[in-house]
Image (cartoon, rainbow over all chains, first blue to last red; front, side):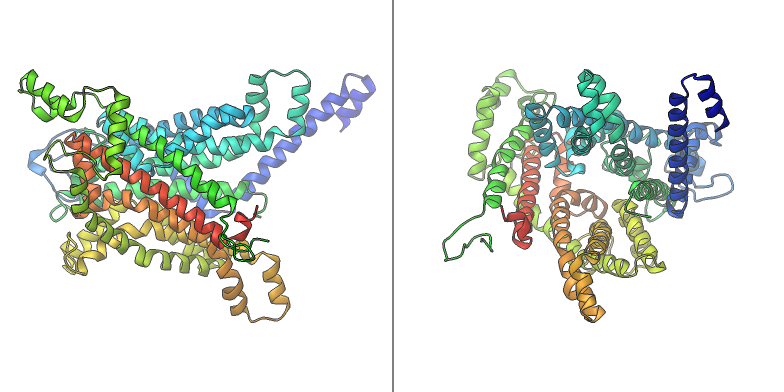
Length: 305
Length: 320
């Protein structure tokens, strides 16, 4: 406060300093309140910790793997967990633990990329539909309706049917069915924000449409975007794993978790570790994102204490 | 004032605008979906006539097949021909076996329907039960446990649960068969695999719907009037909370038919889900097209039925 009085005395624009400092203080206290509220949700915090660990593994996992992920060892085919092979080996003698470490980057990379691209496209479409309305809105919403008419897994299978199997095509398939959900949510959020006073002020000051949309309206919709984004990652991981399980995703050499599970299916009576570990990791990963997403949604909801 | 969707006061037949609007909206949507699926299949690279005739076939044979299947016509004519035949129940012939697609589907549909029924027999009941118990014990340990069970059910891949079930109950314990629906025991594991996700989703929705209903004024009024808590819970809150839950249940059931593909793969059940994956792998486009069309249209129809039912149950929706 003494700085403010000094500035007032010197008449060096103390009003703008005062407002800036109050805004910063307000933002800091909102951030602290958000963190405090989030930390109360222990399961959400657990989810976040697991996600951070997975991201770290995705980055350093390939360097930590004790074996090359595609190293064949015909002397140790289908062997169970041991000191040399913590998660056992598969039908080619490949170390499952190493494959899963390397596969973390592949699985998370494909799912995150698909959701990021789908979210970006869906957000742009939703913003345009909500802002302009009319024919733009009609085209975007009817297009979303058509895509929503297909259950997720069916749409993904149909896309892979056209493009052919492969991990990149799985990314495209997952991305396509992510777009309509973001388009709808962002359209609703845009409609809610569009009528705000600050948007009206910006328009009356002659702000161009592009700037209005991405600088003024978009920040007001971020909350909806973030919650949906986190929730969709879990479904994307599940969908990518499902497609690989059905044989439409990664090929046999790639250490994608769903593909590993698919291969394990053929050895279920004699090498159950090939099924336990990849499935367990998929489960823990999806659970972490769902717990985190739920916690984030509850934290951002003003009705929940 | 209109009190029912179909009969106005005085006995005159009337269908409220909501129902007419919903039904009319579905028709162009189904048309667009049919165009979408048709174009989708025709985007697949390769020559279907060559696929049917074989790689070593003479060009004249390939040309004859094009003539027979109408593949030399413009795409719009092909679409119109396909839709006219579809209305008569003709979905074309399998390129692999030359059997009518409708016969292949009819042959396999009973297996998938049995699977779907097995999934919906127990999952909604358990899901709603967990959700209601959770809502009644809101904030307590039981609430957290129930929701943890629900979120775990949502996060576990169904195909992994199925495989784990086979490993534990079929291979290690020998209690249940690992595949087939010949006996009642054969239904247990596939039913669990199919229903787990539905149970989890319904538990979460039931809880949130019940909590919303418990905050309503009429519930507070019922308590203030001194009604027993059990009466308040079940006669007022639970019954009204079911409106939203029934809608979600309908949508989940709509997705089950296509979701059966994973369960059928795990348990080697020869249903329409496996027919779809086989047709894609063998590039049998006629079967793929027929199945995609059928899955999408049934999903839209079920959505329509759910919306109409919602209008019947909730008068606020249909009163214009």
